[in-house]
Image 1 (cartoon, rainbow, N blue to C red):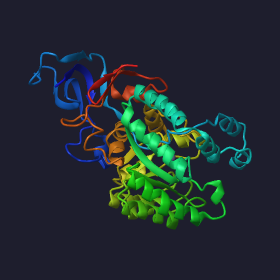
Image 2 (cartoon, protein in one colour):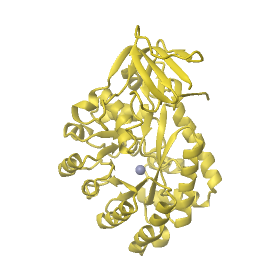
Image 3 (cartoon, helix red, strand yellow):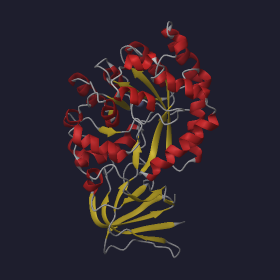
Length: 415
Ligand SMILES: [Zn+2]
């Protein structure tokens, strides 16, 4: 029974909920901050939390003690929306956009999501895994200890399974907690350009049953947007997933208020993600459904296409999570502190709300908040120390990595 004691933590941000699965409304601003705190970890879970002067109970002789003076501690970040498994990169496209080219012109020159589909189909599972391992390690080094990863660059049965097997192996072999999402309905593959409903049939009749049988994904997601998967097509796919025991997410209202958030609420999805164009009806429906609104500030920043109405969502009582959407086309960053900075500078969120959004609410979007997302007795000991004077400073001093020590499931990680 190994014990680890962190003592003299200048500022401990617990993000404690007192048993709630998520923070919504005014509660999203309550972080449970303690000064000069100590945390006792035993067998990978938080066993005791106190302040200087309190004596931790039941200390063993072979305990590891860490003096965290001058540092702050936060729960490990939960990045609940990424497309981290992919081959290739699209900096040429970025440069074309910077040079004033339109999306259409870029697509004509072979850019866009289908270029990533092409590269990912060509790659072996081993290559995909090697690339993903490097990214997961880099995320850990920046404080992210739980990561959701979507398929969706295969878009045929074999390539989607290759991606999901890769994600599954990462979940077994890496330090990070990895959650797999099947996103066969990310885009229509070129071979189904003129027979879109046949691709929906393929997803519902072949891919989903196979994914469910082999338990390759905990969630199913759909890119629901006019011009992509219609509300009816998305509903068909998500209902089939639900029937097969897979939980639901929706890429919703990114380009227009096209019914994605309404559908997410109707099906009581765990989260509705993007929401740059959600309207007040969608907001009210999400609130009533208890669906987490997962906002992706890095995408709006990188594409310069407008931000989700975070303030309206929070004020309406919808729990808001932040995630990176890390992917080669619209956000080539997985820095959660950067996402928080953008959320505060461009979306009207407070630093407190941004921290809840990046920890407990991200965990709730993955249905993991019983075990992850806050520093509370009995939860998994994912805790990160930062060399900053207080938690606000972490978001304020952006563009640099302030991590000092990473502890995952009670284990100190060395890089
Ligand atoms: Zn996405």
